[in-house]
Image (tube, rainbow, N blue to C red; front, top):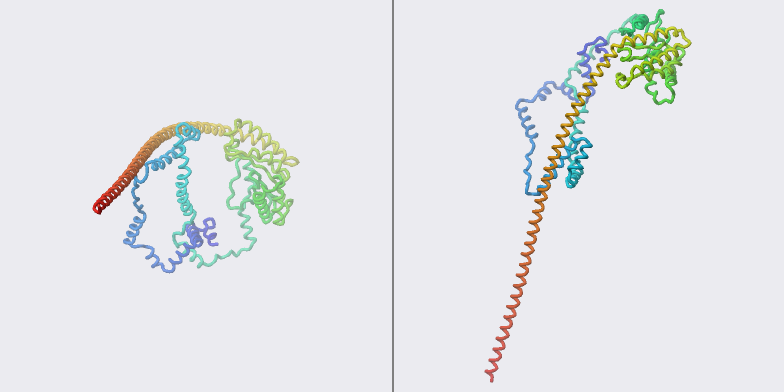
Length: 508
């Protein structure tokens, strides 16, 4: 209620309206309310606590710098593994980035002509293993940023709430002591007689001036204390009611607004034609207000505007007709409801104007059939032709501007294609150089791997030879040991035999 009182259109000021708006923002945010309550409870302490000392600021900045420091990463041990791993990690990423910069056709040709089988396999392996790992951190970083963007901004100060408290202390405004008839008379005096403005606008070809200080959609009739309601039901269809008193005209205006709402909400869901949907919406809206469509005495007309044919401020209208004929009129003229720059895509706009003339003439005849407005049909058609002729210079200027714009667009496209061609050649040359370097690194790694395997095989061969020699030496040592044992045993036996023989001779 206070927002309506301080609104600039209701006699308030912008500063007061902004303060009330800030107060509503603080009331709708729980954290902002808690902060404001804390400020009201202890304004001195809150201000002291909220304002840190210079030393505390310095310490906080130093702590933030220490927290933001990136820890030193240990140096990679190049001797821990072969050089092939580093090359397989860096070159596929570079090649993939350069391939994305090339067009699809050139990309396939480069892959077919310049890639080796090993490079294709390594690139596919990298895309399956390492590429998803690189994309996951980027998505994880994007989620907090999106969440932070969706968070509402807190209120900045509590001045708005102070204004609200002051507003509650003020008493309500004094109501007027005049009677209801006096208020309605003042309301009627605010309305303007727009029939004369409409006639002057139709005669001069200019639209009626904007009404100031009157109810939108209510027009005063020529008769005393008689008014009518006018409303746009469809984008090109204008509807007006019969001339009644003010309260009835307001009811008719509410009915027309409700009918438009029903058409927008349920128009596409119905299987009826446009005429049937319009009649159903009007009947429903009138029954809700306790009225009938026949009592409203509705008259409708079709309005067509075209900047290319009539100018930006000129429109042509069909005569007012009954509700039963507007469907046929709409079906004939709705096909010419073009976009703003439709004439740029049409090869022959003059032929389109000829078709519109024929359709507009038929629509006017349908609208004026069996009515006194049939006498106005020639003047309406002649006015449309006069507006078309008067707008010839504007059409020529539009065509010249479009031709110049097309020329600029073509030049820009040529320059852009030339730049893209240069960039494509640069990217292709960079890709070829990268592939050559990658191939050289692969060949170098392959040579290193071959030499490493050769050294390994040679080491294995030498170790086997040494093992075989040691085995041969052990076998030879064992043979010598057995022979020595045998010799020792033979010597012992010979000594025993000699001892036995000497003992026998002594006995004899």
